[in-house]
Amino acid sequence: MTDRILHFRYPCFKQVYTKSPRYTLRHAKFALRRLLMSRQIMRFERYVNTAPHAQIFFHQHEHEAYPLLHLFADSRFGATKRQQIMQYDLEAALRNFGAPVFQQISQKPYYCLLAKLPDGCQLWLNRNDQLSDEGWWAVSLRNNQGERIYTASFTFVPPNALLIGSVQGPNTADAKDVVRQMTKTLHGIRPQHFMINALQLLSDCLKTAPLLGIAQDNQVKLRWALKKRVQIDYDELWANAGGTRHEQDGYWHLPARPERRDETEIKSQKRAMYRRRYAMLDEIAAQMQRVFSSSNHHSTKTESE
Image 1 (cartoon, rainbow, N blue to C red):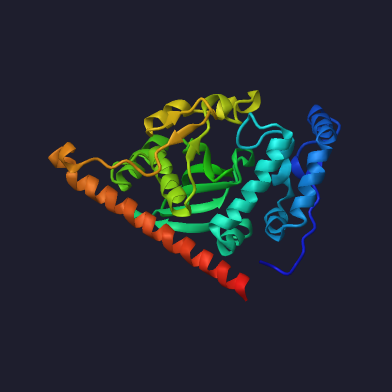
Image 2: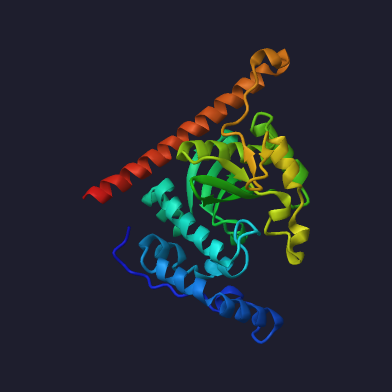
């Protein structure tokens, strides 16, 4: 991926909290966690410094390793489990995305165009630049100005699953109008539900399974400082997407592919809209296949040279 070795050291307090003063309660908590988890930090540093793709991912972004100390993806993960999941996630991302796409979203421009949508809108695969605790990867729905309308974060977890962390939409004064217009652009699919469809198509393309959703009680935002930012009921969201919650692992297991209704079940005046909707989803899937086929072909060719 690169000949340059970028030595990684776990971030210090000021790298994580750039605007927060030292010698505060936040600083004390950080120092205590770092002390208590020194073994996991040492193992994680050793891993990153033997994995060139991980070194590239954290270069100038050391602060994104902070979730090791607190929360990552699923609030039930303890310190050692977080370390293992974070390492697995980086390995799986390289394997699933292919080296070219992995590098493209690890460094500038930090995103890869997955698909072009109607009316000049786009679907991106990018670094999660909102809250890395919820996962390092995200798909984002962009309007024709490149502005983010919706984003959904995810993490790869063993043995071969894609775990959806959060689905977030606009919080501006005109949010309802934005969502209404985007629903029209997506042939009647609400943007929130479209993000799940996009991850179903991505998971299918990458051949990961099962597709999982984190239950409401296990969301990492459900600590007191971030509760106000949780504006949806995730259990209801996953259930409405056709998911079922499994007692064994506590996750919602979602359908592998977007639902398709038989045309005979659809009112005649809406059939044309549904045909356009399904054609759009098919085209998104085809575009994703081209992106990752090219990336993985390049990775295989590079490894053989």
